[in-house]
Image 1 (cartoon, rainbow, N blue to C red):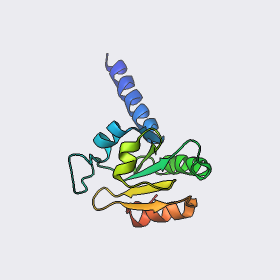
Image 2: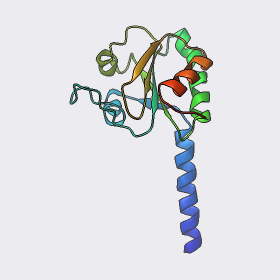
Image 3: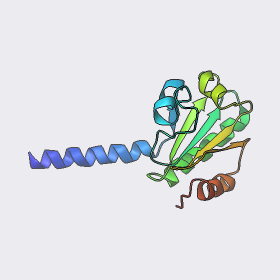
Image 4: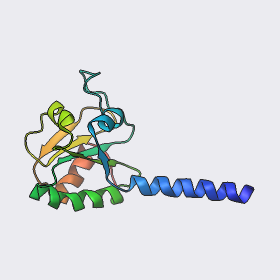
Length: 140
């Protein structure tokens, strides 16, 4: 009994750690619960507890395709320190409109406390890491 409990706890922790090291895809609905509900709050109120990056992208977008593996690396390197989200702007037009997304990729940097900052265009990994340090206040 004790052994199976320990195995279950270890499995749960392992799954939790693994799932955080991946990029998480959001819809309009899940964005409202995990990040920000723009319909209920006029002022910024982050729903999460951990700093986050949100990549607004589209499947057909060339620069978005180049950014994707960079963000996957970032998610692994900063596992447990930040969450990396992706929002498909073609499929989730409400959140895209709420944030005024007109060009993609657009990257929203969300500190645990404070105001988010938006960057537009394909950023090199070094610039993303710099924003993680400066805006999110997170170091490796």
